[in-house]
Length: 331
Image (cartoon, rainbow, N blue to C red; front, side, top):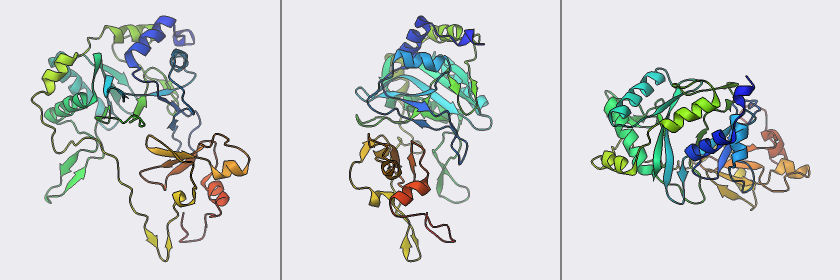
């Protein structure tokens, strides 16, 4: 078992060439969240760029990383990944894989905990918007559900967003220079939640065999993707991914729901979908010298987390707004 997890220099170099399109990445926590048991991803602190040594540690099971598809300097991606984790997901991925093959596009199917991932590699980085448009049109043709797509309700004329379906990475057509988009778990590492390694179908379950298989796959060219999308219009039910608007805080009797942003005085940094600032609880204990332990969701500031492990109760107490435990108290 241990020998198969050793990654040679050549394996690491080939992996880097296939998957790495920008220096930013995420790490999966090895400690499950106490509330729901999930192992969340977070970005390393500071301006740390993804290195070959980090790739090696991922392949050998020491850490698990997530990859970003889009390079904001070019709005292009080296790969497209189709993520499906719902009932009958594998059947839909096989349909997509077969249809892609009819276009001359080879796709590698990777196992996952609840379904699978379908990966397509580019001969040279392709525009993210073209890749998304092509896969969305393919899914529409095959009647494969796309998560978040609008669907008309019957008999009413209202539309609802599909809760289950494939997710296409890159998730955005464009990513600004100070943003990241959405990361996906990098292949061939250990999923911390499942505690196991997932492999690609089509090759022996060894790192060298897996990478050799992926390297042999025919890669889609820019001329091909341009030809595929030239006659496609963006369907109304599949709009480009947009930022969610912040909902106003509801009133609870005479008292408004707690908003942590009202108690943070300066020092916020916007990184991706979150603000990062000093954790009040850490500061009270003389920690968090870098001033970025506390992450606050921009879209919904009710969601905030200290990456050093402080509980919400600790944070609220440090702010002088303790959580009241009696019935009807605001959280």
